[in-house]
Every structure is written in C-alpha cells, then in structure tokens.
Image 1 (tube, rainbow, N blue to C red):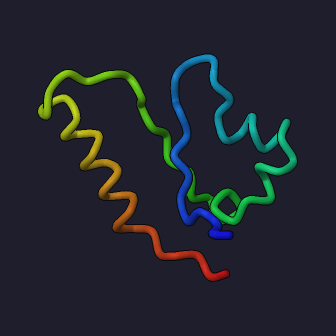
Image 2 (image 1 turned 180 degrees about the vertical axis):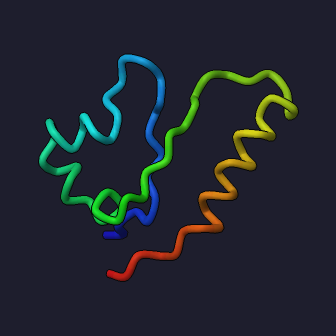
Image 3 (image 1 turned 90 degrees about the vertical axis):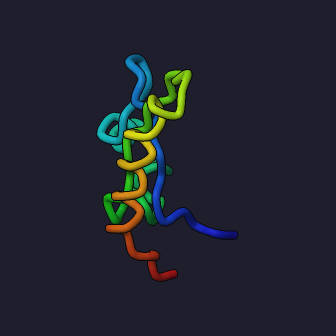
Length: 72
C-alpha cells in the first residue's frame, strides 16, 4: 500500500475541512500526510477555460515543489 504524501481536500462549503476531519475522524489524524500537515484545499468548481484553470494549477504546482516525499 502506498501512503499519500499530499492530500487534496475539497474546499466547498459544507464539506469537512482538515480541522473538522481531525476532530471527528480518528483515521484521518493517523494518515502520514495529515500528520505532516500536507493537506491542500482544492477548489473543484468547474472552470470553463484554460485561463480559469491556470491559476489553480500554478498553486498546486507551488505546493508540490515545496513538498518532499514522506519517509515510510
């Protein structure tokens, strides 16, 4: 099994966010990416052009560049 180095979290209103997940879901707090504070809010709203997606992809790329693989 492969553990995630980074977890993207749906940031839409009404969805549990990392702080709420940590309080209510014991398994969430045990995930290596969560223990290493490697969660990233992901906006899943539809974008209808490359210009709409580009800023979000750039944000994700920046997070990935800053992240090192977690040791097993």
